[in-house]
Length: 629
Image (cartoon, rainbow, N blue to C red; front, side, top):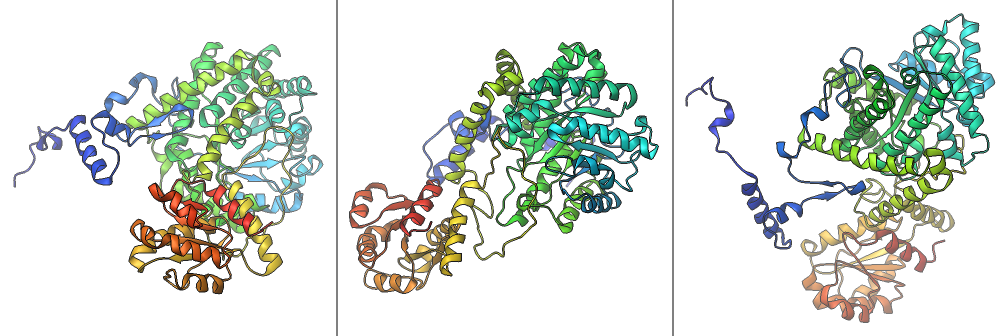
């Protein structure tokens, strides 16, 4: 073996490969898998994945797929795709911002101090309705060095009163406003989205503009307004819809602030944008990169100088993705989401505790949340590289496609009269509801799996109890969760358990040896448990003669046949008839029926369960026939 010549790159030792060669390999794999015959580009299309917003993710990206290299620019320069600052987060890392929603000011203070002593660099404090009373802000922040720790207030419609309390607190402590940092959290359009109340929108906008003027004059490191896109994400909106709504909101605030006397650059400096980070790693990275590009273009058109066009971003792990069942899995989701937010270039990142969906997080959950970010920053060194996903043909293409889809939605909102008008007319709500209906169908069919809920549920888990959290503001856009349909099914099962001492049961009528029926029995067991139905697989195998006795002994209300297609053809009809005669209120069959559907149905099979079936519909029907309220 000879050493590689220094003049030749390593790749020169390997033959060149082209896309056609790769497509031929794909064709072979598709043929072996039994998929439809496809050749060339059609074979590649068979492996594409459809996302929301009309975006399709292809299995292979090359340099030909990447947008113009100039579209990303350089870190710290328009259009700020690669980073809002020239150094990115490499100097001090991103801002680790912990959220606090406890209404008891003294308990909130204990949690705040614990966080600041253990790695958190800023606070996101709920004030007023949904948080500590405005009059007790000083108690909640007792012992906090306001010139060192940035504070982001979240007071909803009470933002003006909360800001006044903040100013008084700084004055009482002798802290100059010029030394403080954070955001006062004024977001009148966000309040409108959350509550649906527009009766005092003009007054709220005027008050927000007044706070912006004061911050511009006295507190240059504090931003007065938050452009919160979470209401749109939490109402079921797509990534592009979330981005488009944030742009329309930002434009509305720029109009208001400049009308109040601020210059465009000063107005841009008063805005902090808040986005959701999900466990879809690449989509979150592309979202934050696209958001900076889009806002840079908006600010440019409005006349902002190049340096003022950078978007300040606060990323928050998604509440839509977190689950109430098996909440420990949320640690994994929030870890991926936090990583994605950091890689995507967010200036501040909030990792919500894994138990936040259950009520007020406990000390352990808050510790895990802040340590998640500490590991990403201090041990994984994620902040030491500027835009680590930059240059990836896939990420660059996804960023570009998201930006274009979001710009189209933003233009629709502006054509309708702006964000306030689009919210008031129901245009935004209807669009988000339509998107969520489509996603709900994917969730119901388990095309979008939810680990611990729709996939691999654990019926015997001990419930995690938490003190109830303050009820969020309502009346506006809804708040959705991916687990909600399955949560409703599990709640029915819990009620049945409480009333009778046992969960609703389904007997697995497995035909033939274990090698034949195990795959479908495992599938059926997983599916049934997603609805809170306990599978009973005893005995291991049955036939037409033993099925009735085994079903009666199981105490189950329904049964599910599990075996191979070949054994179904031989035994399914007789076994189904025997189960029905033994009192099974419903008989399922694991697998697609094919041409024998009518024969199976005549024998007593009521429904078929298979990958891609309407799991929620099947499970709801099963609970209905077992009279589970």
